[in-house]
Image (cartoon, protein in one colour):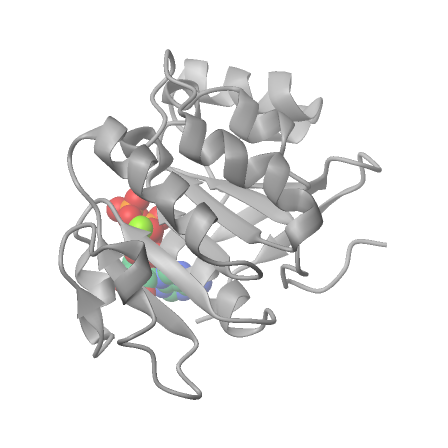
Amino acid sequence: MLSPLTIQPGKRCIVAGRTGSGKTTLAHAIVKNSPGVWIALDTKRDPFFKRFKKHLPELEMPSKIFRWWRPHQKIIVVKGSSDANANDEWIEELFLSYENVGLWIDELYMVTPPAMQGQGLSRWLTQGRSLKDSFIGLTQRPAWVSRFCFSEADEVIGFNLTLDDDRKRMVDMTGNAAYRKTLNPHVFVRTNQTTGESRMEMLKV
Ligand SMILES: Nc1ncnc2c1ncn2[C@@H]1O[C@H](COP(=O)(O)OP(=O)(O)OP(=O)(O)O)[C@@H](O)[C@H]1O
Ligand SMILES: [Mg+2]
C-alpha cells in the first residue's frame, strides 16, 4: 500500500507538473505532515513563500540558518540564486552542516539542469540516505532536470504535463504510462519507485 502523503526520514520525493497545477501547495501539505525541520530553497521567488515570517536572504550561509530557527518552526525558507552552480554548492554546504533535516527545492531545474549533476545534490540524494536527510524536489519541466533525481527518488508525483518531452521523461523514469495522459486540474498520480505501485489522488486545499 502507498503510505499517506508524508516523507519519512531519509526518503525522497519528486513532484512534476505544469505551472499552477498545485506542486507547491502539495509540497507544503506533505512537509507539514512529515517529521523534522525542513529547509526550503525558493529558487523561483514564488509569492507562496511570502507567508513565511522567516524568509532568509539569498543563499544564507547554511551554518547560520539555525540561528534563525525558533522551536516549533517547521519550515525555514531561503532564497535561491539564479546560478545553478551556486545553488548546488549551497546544498553541499547544507549537507555538510546538518544531519536529519529535510530539503525542499522549489524548481529543480534551477539547481540541476539536464547536463549538470552537481556534487551537492548528488551527495544529498545518495550519501544522505543513511543520515535520514529527507527530500522533496519540484519541477515544471521534468525533461529539463537531470535524470539522477528521478532514479534516486523513492516516490514520484506527477500532475498534468502538457509538453511531450516532459510526459515522456515521466513515463521513462517511472515506467508508469499514466503520465502520458492528460490529468484533470489538481489531480496527481503517485508512483512508488520501489514497488511500482501507483495511485491517483485529488489535491484538496
Ligand atoms: N486542489 C486545488 N483546488 C483549488 N485550487 C488549488 C488547488 N491546488 C492548488 N490550487 C491553487 O492553484 C494555484 C497554483 O498552485 P501552486 O502554486 O501550488 O502551483 P504550482 O504547481 O506550484 O505552480 P508553479 O509551477 O507556477 O509554481 C494556487 O493559487 C493554489 O491555491
Ligand atoms: Mg510552485
